[in-house]
Length: 563
Image (cartoon, rainbow, N blue to C red; front, side, top):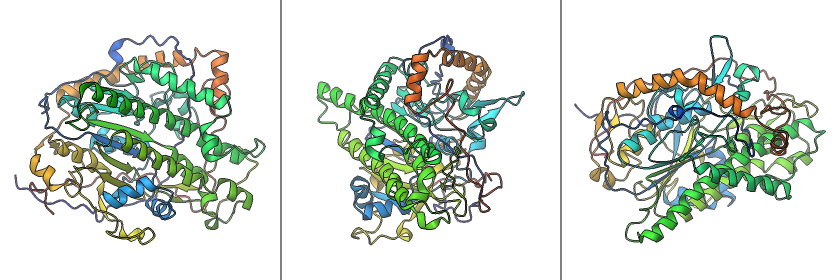
């Protein structure tokens, strides 16, 4: 096989404006729920095998933290770094590798984040939307069992490597992997609105099985939820502390925007707490094992953490952040009240980066977003008296995302060497590749082959020459062997029964638990949110369906890793 270079710029990739229902994030939910979820253990996804090339061993390497942040936009990062609001992210841009990351034409969250961990396009990995309709045209959520390709954690598991996967899209029910998992769990009630056209991001549903692996970890997640509820009841609401108090209920539109923000932020706090549990536990293990000679030896080989507050804030509050762009300009009082919501969401990410690096100084860190963001519906009318949520920010035209990396495995490519804050322009941010290239790169980083049926290829210009020399690049035809495909097909047949038991558990909520749900952003029966969200009508809103362009197959990268 002759090795040839592949383009890292994606020149000519089609970018079509597309109409999509905006993703929302529900909050912490189902406090103290454990009902009649009598699902047999065969529903748990345990599919460990090495038939497709996993050797069971891998070279020694440093642990990795992959922080996936939904909706980070380079224009805002540069602005907030210039203002001094993001010191930890600024350190990554100054001392590490900083680049722009191309995204897919279909910018729906579960689609892209599944591409990130499978290296496959949506029509190949099977997660093409938030939900699907059955033969009776009833909506159903896409589950982890619908994923047709192996994910990073499956491939690491086969190679004898451990993963901690926290809050990632389409991970419910959890898989029994080497390491641990905290699923982002959603419910079928979320597809009852507009026939599944509007879905919000999930959370950890307190007390339900198959959300964590190992199962005992759910107790710790329940404890985090109880601590959050107590803080809200005692007047220490972390959302109020960061974003300010909610607007009066009679102001229906701002109230709905704030509810979306609050419930989304609660979920992120739970997921972040789970990640800190992992890192703090590894610190204790390292002390007990006296692993000072091997930095990071007690950490998992990979920690994947997803956060979505930035995406929610950017959808909901862009009009207050950039009021001059909108014909229906908010009042000066509202601009003063809500104008910094997006910046505070970015500061939450920055603080998380600082804490991750403090807790795991020996780990490589890769921070990425699935797409960027910008203002939309600039000519639309926003009516405070209506209960419909209205989006003023979006990403339907596939703006590129963010990639920042630091650690011994990654090259240094600062935004502008030697430049002081404020000297870096948007044009200084170079493109390194696309979201489909992340998995191949992370496999090569630990000496594992990438698959020729991946849509992506390893980003050799991200990895250090030393790591490439130590880890010769190998490839194989596919990881998704017949054994895997057979097991996935068997799981698909079990989904209807799984859904029935899951919904029975949700329906077992008592009045006290429902009251707690309402306190955390839910109202009415079950899991129905206060109102179905809708985008305001505007002549500039795109109306065409998503175009899912299939990039042409690309040749293997240069074997010596030099560009």
